[in-house]
Length: 244
Ligand SMILES: *Cc1c(COP(=O)(O)O)cnc(C)c1O
Image 1 (cartoon, protein in one colour):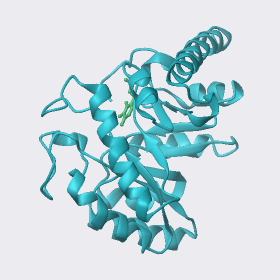
Image 2 (tube, helix red, strand yellow; image 1 turned 30 degrees about the vertical axis):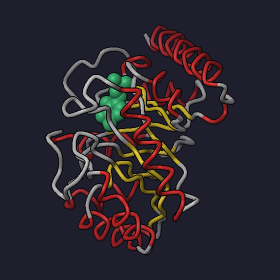
Image 3 (cartoon, rainbow, N blue to C red; image 1 turned 90 degrees about the vertical axis):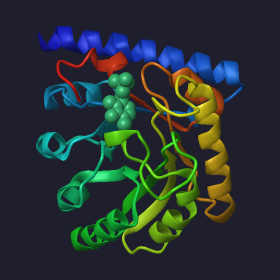
Image 4 (cartoon, rainbow, N blue to C red; image 1 turned 45 degrees about the vertical axis):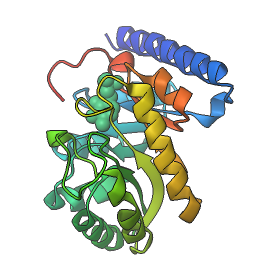
């Protein structure tokens, strides 16, 4: 059973690796510019362990209730945990105990809470600003509903807040291809917009050079646009058994 699963994961990983390599070649980018993050949500710690044995070093989760016990089962593995889901402030203490990078920072209140808990835990937390591309302006969240994100015009202020917060490190930007608005169904254009936002951010914060974009269905568009990190779940682990 474990052997079958290992073979399945190895096969899927090889396929995803081929896709990333091909996309890099097509874009004229060196393969090592793009890091694969495997999104392990809804899958058990045993899969995380197999992935680590197969060489995966970056994993992502979107719900603390699920991620916290899973990370606790895997503390012996050389993994960086990314948190990619909507984050409520009452979960921040827990997330700050295992996450290396929080990709879904989208409001000042969250920055304050993350800073406090990072300091408390004696850890430095990497932060990506999650950008909602279904709205160009306005502090309010977009019609992405529970997908989160700050409108592009809110990025500079949030960047200053993170850069000035103790215990936090501003690493870059992240987006999820929007389902509504001008970029709905236009992944490449959405990711190119994210790259513009990243370029603007790096003008004032040159070290914040991570660009996290692209999932199983659209990683090629993300690589073409210039993403440095792709977040791939189903293409590695299979179609999720339940919504997540
Ligand atoms: C689930 C998830 C992914 C991975 O999606 P797949 O389509 O399974 O590859 C990427 N990013 C975020 C924020 C997610 O929640």
